[in-house]
Structures are given as C-alpha cells and as structure tokens.
Image 1 (cartoon, rainbow, N blue to C red):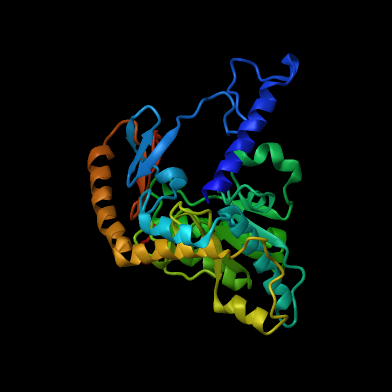
Image 2: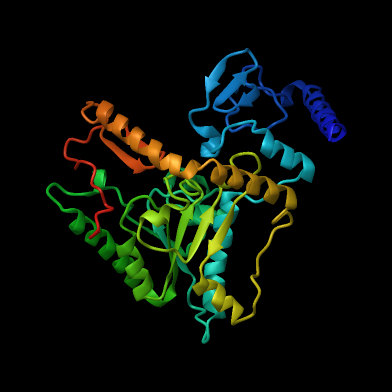
Length: 374
C-alpha cells in the first residue's frame, strides 16, 4: 500500500506547488491559510496530529491531549487499535457511505414502502421532523433537519415536503408546575395537529433522534395514521446510551433506524440503516427490490473493519460498561453542576450527556420523560 500512498502524496505536493505558482492576484492572501485542502475554516490553522493511541492524540509539537470528544463523536473503542488496523490492512483500501447518506436511504425506503403496499399509497410523500434537529449534510438529510444555521444558505434548494414540530426539551419547553404527562400530551397533540394540517394520508414518517423518553406517545400518533417512525441513531446509537440501540430504553421499536459513528468507531467511514419486518415484508410481497444504492455500498474492507469494532465491543462488554460508567458520570455531573449559577440543565443517558451553559429564570428543572406513563 505504501506505493499508492506515496503517489497520492506526490500528487498533493504537485498540486500545492501549482497553487503557489499562480499569478499574484489569484493567490490566497498571506494572512490566510495556504493549502490545497479545503478545510472547514480557511482562516484558522488546525493543529496537526502526528499519532493517536487509546484516548490520546499526540500533536506534531509533542503535546499529548485527551480526545474528549472522540473525534466527531465517533471513536468508541479508542484510537490505534491494532486488531482493527490489521483487518483493514488485510482487506485493501476504499471508502463507504456516511450517516447523511444513511438518512437519505431511510427516507427513500419509507417512501417506497408505501408504494409496495397493496393497494399502494402514492400520496405519501411528506415527512415531519423536529425543530433544531440535525440529520445530515446531504440535500436530502438536510431537508429533514430543522437546524436553521445549517439550512439557511441552502434553503432554496431543500425539499418542500418536510415540516417541523417542537423538539422535546423539558428544560425549555415545560411550563411552570406542568406535569411530565401534560408536557408529553402537548407535544403529542402538536404532532397530531401537524398530521392534520398536511393531510394524515400524505405523511410517510415522523423522523427524530431518541434519548428524550416521549416516543410511546409519538409512535401512537404515527400508528393512528399509518405512518412510519424513523429514529436517527447515527450519533446516539451503537451502545453510547448503555444499550445497543437507544430506542431500547424508550419502550418503542422504530420501523426504520439509521446507525453510524459507533458502528465503525472512526476507523472507517461507515453507516447504514435497519428496517423492521413491517417494511421488509411489504417489499418482499411487492417488487422485492429496493431502488437505491451506492458504488461502494457494503464494501468488504469497510464491513470487515466495522465487524471487528463490533466484536471488540461485544468481547470486552463495553455496552454494559457504558451503562455502569454512565451512572457514575450522571452522579458526578449532578453533584458538581446542579447548583452552578451558569448551568441550566443536565440530561442524557449512558455516556451520552448534555449540559446547558445557561440558566433560564423561569425554566423547569430536568424532567425524567422516561416516566412509565410518559
């Protein structure tokens, strides 16, 4: 493989030299970072990581830092595990699909499901998601997302068949003295009203990321109108909340689920989606084909690496450890920050937690929406 990498390196160097030789008026100003790579921030020079091992990143200047974010929230077994590297080396080199593409596939499958039914339901073209949500950067996934900052400049290009309802956030959404049951009922009613506004028989699915504990009520709305429930677990799934799938702690089973990040642990770019019997049986009884695919879909190298990551997670009992250490993390977070004047909310599960760095004077304390009646 070294010859291939050497050739790629020489190509990059040649391209950079070409950039440097450009006429003065076309060059990048001296006060900006010069590189042939289009980095996310062209005005900031990123630190260079020379190596990584376990929890640690070693920078080119010798500094050793803890990778507290796990890269892009993806490194679930640590960096540099030789077992995974050996599997990758044995398979060759290529790339694979990402979480955004998994969401694209999930919504396409939801659409096709309704066309495979007997009789088919071709009017089902709409999707409902949540305000502030993020489901990916492709145009399809971004259309589903409700994150205004990420959507704003691409808004004219995004699909118009998606609408959004309020996110489930007890800290910001619950009224003073409101019960958990009443708050969940309010959100359920809002989803019902949105179904009615766009036509219940036109909705393909409600799309959301779990870990909020109100999905029994949301799924009942979907079931009432024959729509699907799609849960996005690219970020929160594959053991991060203390169970293999976050929905296992929600008391519901999704019709379609996206997975990623922890699937390959950052060793390879890999994601995918899972579908339940309801969806697969419809395809099986219809055309028997899913009209979707990618050139490098299910590439052997990527699949082998992801499988090795999952073997390590299972062999080392890491999901159970997430649940155990998550309880420790929750206790410490609450002990340290519950009364902090600049911390408004602490919420999460397993090792997937969020802390709000603000304090709303009229906000409610964190409510456990996993209450059996929620």
